[in-house]
Length: 87
Figure 1: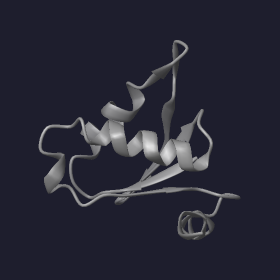
Figure 2: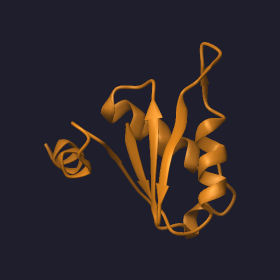
Figure 3: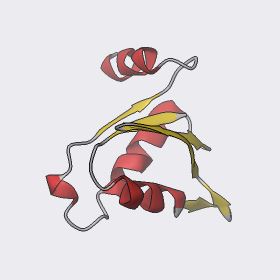
Figure 4: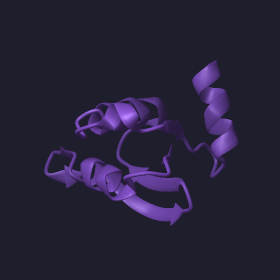
């Protein structure tokens, strides 16, 4: 799973990520939206999913204006995901 933090244009982010297909399967599926947090289930491993999500978000027109944080969710814990990105 991955977590995308973004307060603005969440519908565009969900649409962009859910349109990514791998072998005719959706690579991302929204699980839950809580405030600025959008949690996605993904077919990718943790870091690969983060990279693919960032690349997909960059295809949204005007993405440069979005403040976005994308991290893996490790053991159902987003804080462990932050640690995984750092090391």
